Image (cartoon, rainbow, N blue to C red; front, side):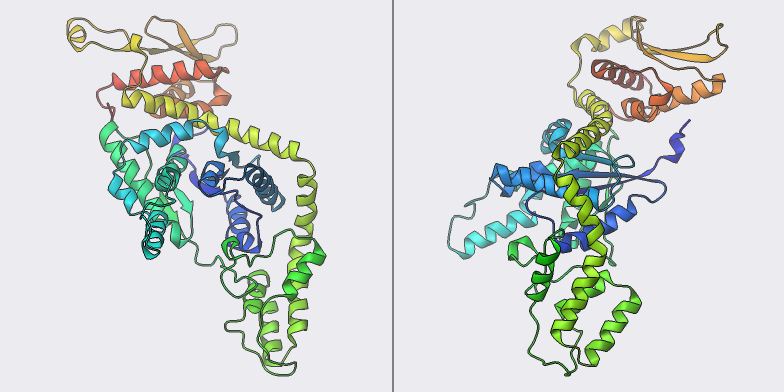
Length: 443
């Protein structure tokens, strides 16, 4: 049985489907994140942030195509959907609901300071236009949606670039405000910045970015990859003339793929006057060596979109096994409750109010120990499977009491299956039971 004291470190990564993945995405995020996802003691969440894409992309076909390409890219690069929770943001309806909850505790002043919003305002002012020209509520509220993405699964770590750290700080602020108002529900997330992860230059030497139009698609066909690498801007030094590695986009890209020995060999070749044509060919062969096997898997996935859809829907089920009971808990916390379970304070003083309860027992037929969760009327809501000792059953009950609805997915192997409505009822009962306990934090 899983121990609640050995809870895994939750790491969450979001990818916005707003274009075709390129080598910069691979080196800066995909390769590193896939390797980290297999680390022991880590529970990884990867999601396609298609709600975020709507902020800046109003072409439905582009969002659909990009979602397919990005999902195929991550899977081709080794992301294991059996090991991680890989889902599409729009398949988890609890996320926009949580966005509203967080909106109601987030100060407008906080959002006024968001980098993306301020950048658009500054751009408008510089052009002498209305400061809010072309500023949608989506752009303004972007940090709250990102906060909901992170807090929905109580992520401990969120790998981001330095330009995204502010959003993690905002998510922490939202979590603290909500916790202060309604009790301890959210983990405060931390940004994770890996200085070893490379930022690639593009074809023109600037940072590789779709906004600059200087990218090299990650899974471009071999001939196209070779052609694009051949177009990387270099200086006019002729073959035989020593060349500088400092500031060389070609060298920086090679370094991101090569081993230390390979990098040192190219550094020496630069000093010896390698021709730019030969240097570009060396870069092409090194990239293709790593990408070619992944490209074959990518092409197979792109030709089978139904398989990608199947994987994402399974991932959404895994995500919702956590988000549904958690949102039930949060709804209860803010007062969106079943009216029939409300308690009148005056009545509570006059009479003891019935509440949900656990019942432990031993089945004579098999000699195993079981428990049930009963509602206030004594009707069963949840049935356990058999345990070899009463201590095991008791520990499972303790986890349910401590983690409430969130524990249902964790303890699925020890419990009889329940449907969506049953999950909601069990979560509400566990919340009511926790509320009746004096030491429970919250409402």
